[in-house]
Image (cartoon, rainbow, N blue to C red; front, side, top):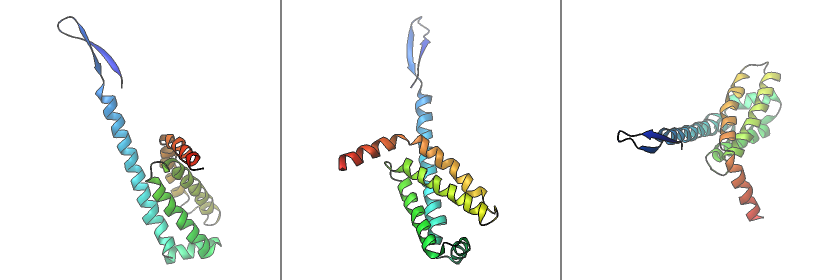
Length: 151
């Protein structure tokens, strides 16, 4: 919070705490959390679910990549795990980073195997994921402390 000295009509002055900074920070936290929920829903429902239920489009795509059903189920499980972890405060930064790496791999697969078709989609998804990873980087310290206590 920032403080400002404001002159009063009586000739004295008073220190006023800027509530706008507090409100702005609260709105930013809400927006970031909303973004995490939206991305978690996207990865869980739109991306992981078709792979995990062996949707014909996903089966065909992974067959074309050459990874088969094992690759499809593995990527689907990783996406689902990332989606869930985005919603767990101590895992949110690590999850966003891991999903970013997964999207980087998806970009290269789209570029190499599919000739660049839909290659922009993973790159677009990396941007909010990196924002979350950076903004929630404090949770990494909490995770390390938690792991150390358990070890």
